[in-house]
Length: 122
Ligand SMILES: [Zn+2]
Image (tube, rainbow, N blue to C red; front, side, top):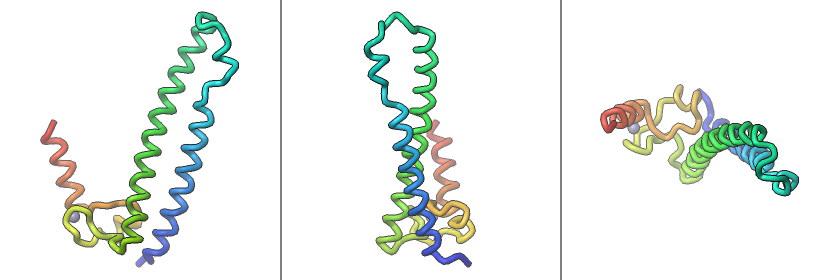
């Protein structure tokens, strides 16, 4: 059985890594001053490539932020003493599930029914 403090340390590390990745993404995402000065009709093809790259970075950024939110939520739960308990039914989340996904906030049952609900709503 894994100690929850180990998961907590892992989550803190994960958070640091996610923040670093997001920061990196922001730095790359800054439009360079050089390009602003150039003619808007000059490098059209390069601009298209850039738009695609920007889109990729945005998608990656959204994923990273979602992960960060989950990790932060789990850290808050740990501090509140409710780490490892399901957000929905309040029962203990399966140990194996926490080992696989330390930021999990729902037990398998609730996660499964949530997925079902999401499908039904469509
Ligand atoms: Zn549950």
